[in-house]
Image 1 (cartoon, rainbow, N blue to C red):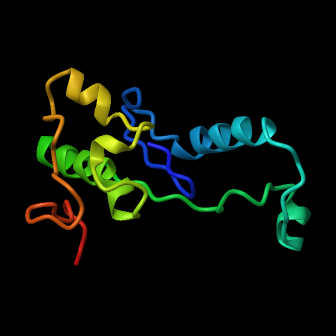
Image 2 (tube, rainbow, N blue to C red):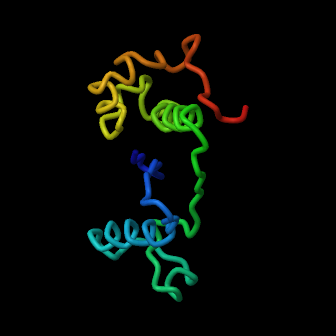
Image 3 (tube, helix red, strand yellow):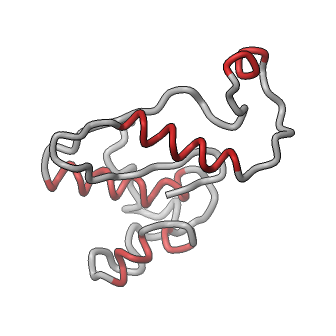
Length: 126
């Protein structure tokens, strides 16, 4: 799911393939080529030929089981609410949440409205 300042993804990679780095490099590269090259870049970014829109690192986690998958999917779907972009999960149009509702995996009103009882942090350390 894409937010204005970051994105989240859950991938199923081929068996024996854990090459996250190449995949992220290709995603960043493809996206960056579609943008005008006029953003501010640090000397370090310029020296390495990098665009200023991306951070150099990423966080990865191998999902252990179905419960771990569900916690991460919930966290990702709730992220636009957490960051104040919308007050309901269904309000974020760029989310796989809408596909998951169509597939019957979530109720359209899942997680309620920001600030309401039961909106929760969805597995994030408090």
